[in-house]
View 1 (tube, rainbow, N blue to C red):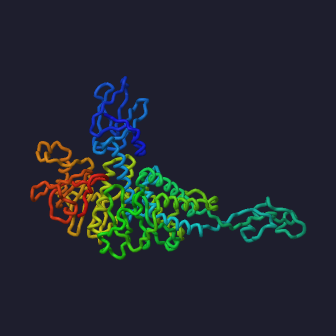
View 2 (view 1 turned 30 degrees about the vertical axis):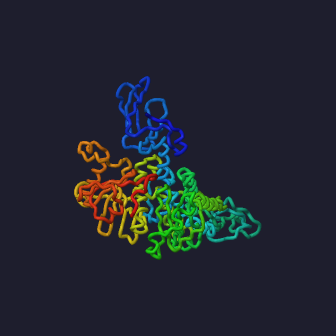
Length: 596
């Protein structure tokens, strides 16, 4: 039965109060029947089973959707498709689980060090809106100091050019007399006047003639340059981006566990003058994200297991991401970490907004026009302090996407829980692998469409281990049969160690699935069959599904046994072969997939 829960709309902004269950069949009746209408459920058209009667159900679809009766004078009905796995007691766990995943993704995007590269320097595409709030939150968080320093440099020495204005002035006020002025005076008889005596320039009809007015040039400085038009355009875009980022924090930050950053945020004009992005400077302070109720984090006062072996030049700051009760994975800080107290992320963004507002209040903006074209060949944008840094950051801002492409933004906006879970698993795996493999450095590479290509990967320690996101295995090469694309591929010094797939809809495999008749009809078995496909076609030791449950299961090929005590650490460093599923849940239950 459908449910009406207006309280969920308050707990999860944008959520429809009309709830439908995934895989449940619903009957939609139009009375009296109307000719020429069509029922659209999501992006599917439903055919009537009788006059005015439609049957439909949502399959493999969770999150926001819409039911539309085309051709009828009725508004669309927004609905929220949920799973019994998310429902919990009184449906209360649905908004909590979703907010936890989004909150932790935001926290990881803010804190994981990464390098973003693109196929071209200035990638462009048609886009009908501003950059996504999730991306701008990360962009502003990581480049806020560089932006503030660049604006300070521009304010101290704004670019201006000398223009020459031609105007006609009385002879008494003329200051210049050259060939051009004489030529103008002789060719404009309307400015001539008869003068007494013989002091004229020439004689006309026996009388001496002099011009009363002459053409003059006035040199004047102006701020209306293409470079300043670009800066103004960028500032207006940044100001809107700050507002969107603050809205995102307010929506998903949560009242009980707001993201906070521990560290100093400095505005250093030196970085802008020297052309060094502060995001890459050696003394950068990377934030530490904790829960608002625990300013020190759960790792305060605890020794990190990798502290003794951390390299002296490690640039990672002390991190403790905490979005749920079991997501605390610490990373040892570098020698330049300078923790002075809690600073709310909202406060940091508000500070940046003040910098932008101050810059937009400069009085000389009044004479600067609108941006018509980008002056890409300008030596000012490529060489002048402040302008150089803004020009370098603009292409990244133009991409208008999160570091994980448009898929993540669409998934969050539509509450596509399965896709959000896939991204969340990637970050959780990185955090879970760091204690054993070393600090992670995330390399994101954009393709020509603004998404990510398969070279996006997290490298651990000295780079001997990599976790690759959506690495393709081409048929006839990496795969001996058809092309495959597992969600995550863990590659070690000896090659691919194992592959993993995020399966949000998977339930814990049950012993009765050992019977072929039951297994063939089971969606759980279908996911495990997919793991068999990965293992066989790719030639890896093990293929594992990650699911939001609380029980592990692994089918050992050598012993033919069904094991429930295997950990991710044992799968990586042990000599196990087979397929299985490991629990990785955003909140509640025992700690999943922990490194031993």
